[in-house]
Image (cartoon, rainbow over all chains, first blue to last red; front, side, top):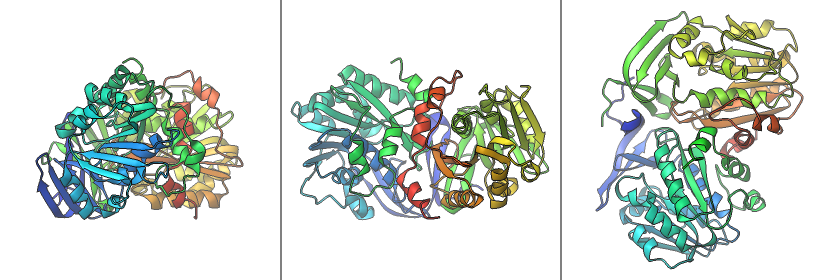
Amino acid sequence: MPLDPSWISEVVPHMGAAFSLKTTRLLDEVQSPFQKIGVYATEHWGNLLVIDDAFMLTSLENFVYHEMISHPALFTHADPKHVVIIGGGDCGTLREALKHPCVERVTQIDIDEQVTRMAEKWFPELCDSNDDPRADLRFDDGIKYMREAADGSADIIIVDSTDPIGPGEGLFGPAFIADCFRVLRAGGIMVSQSESPFYHMDVLKNVHRAMLQAGFADRRSLLFPQPVYPGGSITCTLARKGEGLDGFRSEDAAAKGFPTRYYNAGIHQGALTPPEFVREALENL
Amino acid sequence: MPLDPSWISEVVPHMGAAFSLKTTRLLDEVQSPFQKIGVYATEHWGNLLVIDDAFMLTSLENFVYHEMISHPALFTHADPKHVVIIGGGDCGTLREALKHPCVERVTQIDIDEQVTRMAEKWFPELCDSNDDPRADLRFDDGIKYMREAADGSADIIIVDSTDPIGPGEGLFGPAFIADCFRVLRAGGIMVSQSESPFYHMDVLKNVHRAMLQAGFADRRSLLFPQPVYPGGSITCTLARKGEGLDGFRSEDAAAKGFPTRYYNAGIHQGALTPPEFVREALENL
């Protein structure tokens, strides 16, 4: 069955792979100063957010990513009060972070206000918590923010970025990761979107190398499904300042008091062990 | 970037989704009495096996599936001596099962000899153990085999099937699953390919229902990446006769004495907890 023009595809040239979704119409499209942002209606996945031809999320499956990039870090830190999100303009990660009552403030810095405006319009469920008094939404350069932020001013830094090309590129670099280390308090945790080990082992290794060089005491890549990315799974990588990442507040996670659709305490524990080929690749950096 | 004719796609119409790989040439194609079997060379994934337009496996990533459909069951059973594989014609699962020195015999029944002939030719690494004296390869109807097999004659039954359409359909049905229960010894384990919860929750629920009705004491679906299936992840479902599935021989798994590339003891433990949306879907059958 050939794909007629109602299908749109994300192609990954270096892997000779593509994932495609059947759309019913283009709902909205803007060219921001940074990137092209499109929203499509699909037949089966709800709305689809596309940035510079890369699939970002759909209504149907974004819960996996948003839960996994937030809750493992938040349930590992003993008492996360100040969370910083770099990127995250769709606001789904912000919503998850604010489910934790111990969180007093979430500062989100996305370079592109248009992503948030599109999310408010087409993914309003992700923006449920944008008016929470603890949410501080800023539209600015996250790299600059981190360079200028005070030492030891954050408990959790979540790097919820696009791919390491275009505006997201610097968020995978050693200078930014070293700034994150400096800005975290002792015991603080950085967590970064770190691509798929099947598609981008080089990215994963570079992120680990930069975290190692920055001085983080422990690092761990969590693998989880990402159904609308070519390759179908992705990692986030956690790094902790001065402490390990084996343990977490498993009792709090088991009695979390808010609903999740992917994350639970067992999933968290299980995700801490990487598959053999990932473990081996990260052994000798 | 449109997909030129060098790309081939697996389309999942009910999800409006497709996964595509760039091929360099068609290496081989046969129409067996049961299905059309094709092998393509790809740019980045090695060879690709396609059956009736569905992607089965590639040289690059088949290790995840073959390890996950075999080792969790084999490291759960206390002393698996006789393993039966239904389907599995590419012989990758057979190879993994035979890595366990306690296994005395693996009887494999695939309805289509042509799948094995194509695997021997284009995926010889999967057929490494076909000449093992413990391997008994038969080409016959797996449903008939199970109907006629003696009560309590197997320790592990691995249902390594294609999708539940075409020749694989009956392998997801209650009559076959009830036969598997009968053929297993006490403590025996059945494990079946059971599709993706993102794409086929109905299949997953039906398999669980049939296992429950057949009398299995415990059931567990393990989710893992399947990079060349649309959706990117898949489950296998374990069911055990007369015993639970929480524990496994974790010390043996940690000291397994043979290499794996995905499976390890932590992955096994982690996979035993399903994501929330899967747990909820399987709660009330």
